[in-house]
Image (tube, rainbow, N blue to C red; front, side, top):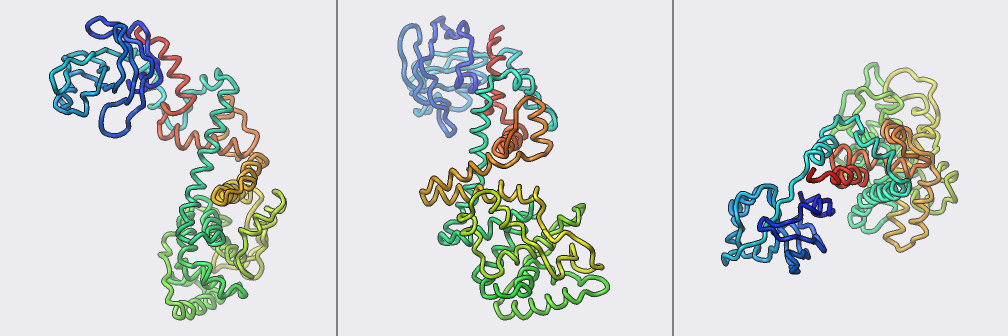
Length: 428
């Protein structure tokens, strides 16, 4: 009922009070999400007389008394009571009668809504509506979703600004570390970066061995049983970490946070932790390097780091050496980092520093990257939404995650169009 009122989806013939006066809504008012009447500052014409005030809604008119509104002066400003069932008159606290109107949802409208929100998570019940929508409406909604998703990531980054006293290198370090988890180990990687801050890492940035000892030790791997059969490199790192932990009074995280069950070896966290050590080698200056990079090609080079030594032949501690790719990150993985890390860092930095050219670079980067290939994007492209770039694929992921799966069809432009069409049958 609130949705119908807010978006003016009623049948004009329904707009009559229970005493026969015609109702014309000039302004439905502002939806109230806190305590008090449902809509503030509405303008309604009742029987040719203009009323300005609040509108309250109930399924049953008797709920007015059940909720104690007849004794609450906060509801004296209500100029119209909108109900689905008229089973009682309502009055203000001084006994004055309040105009009341029935606004019922048609069975077709209700069925359309339930069809949207009660579908299996894998289905797309609005697919037919997507095909019928004007291309401009789809484009506008997709752009809105893309910036909504980007801003969510930006807010996470900006939440680190005060924590690190405005140090963009520290912000970048934690953000990149989190991204190396690629969804499975995001939280674990972020905790590792926070427990092994740059100020500590920079004391040993001239030694990859010590950087790895710090990171693997803080990750909690040396608190776990040593690899069966022995591993000399593991033992050396463990001894070095014991020394550094005593020197700096370090406490490792719980190693059980790391997830490797049913994960392909190339997605194990070990080589990615070694990669993080390589990023810090010689001093971590990734934020400056990203800002100085001229285009996507130079950005890719920053992440196309080759591993040597132990991690060039091992996915984890222990086991026989194997012939592995020297690059930890594939082109597809670098795409994900550019989308989920570099672009949001650009936008956050540009917004915070007032440098809108850098913020624009974030959008340009997403528009220049190929779209992500996953089941979510495939579902919407099959329904008729074109996906030419990463900016659009991010929008489709936002649509699925934040609207479809959350059953927020009322807040989706596609769902709104479907329900608007259903509302044309209101009262039938």
